[in-house]
Length: 136
Image (cartoon, rainbow, N blue to C red; front, side, top):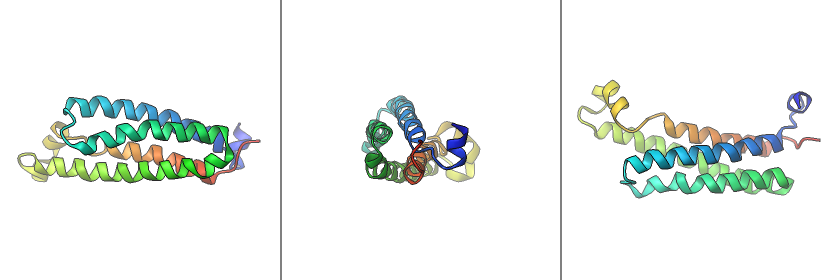
């Protein structure tokens, strides 16, 4: 396995990690957004994209063709949604009393500013998997 990683042959393994990461983050996002009563319809998007990313990851493990088509497409959408979520969370912090001038308190009590970037990392893993070579 180390030799495969050293030679850039890590496509299937990283696709599997992407699938697992997508499911775990989607579950966590569901619970966090449920606490906020899904007050914004956009809160459903990362919950829906999680299983889609997982399916694309599993497809990438099973098929080289899917690893080069479905996985990067789903991963790019997940990355875009993570960046969008970062914007929404920053906007939510700004709308709290005191906004960014009361940053420390509002970051603790408002939407977690950096959490959507974790989703972006999962999508990034899928994009990286798509450019790597398949294990032998």
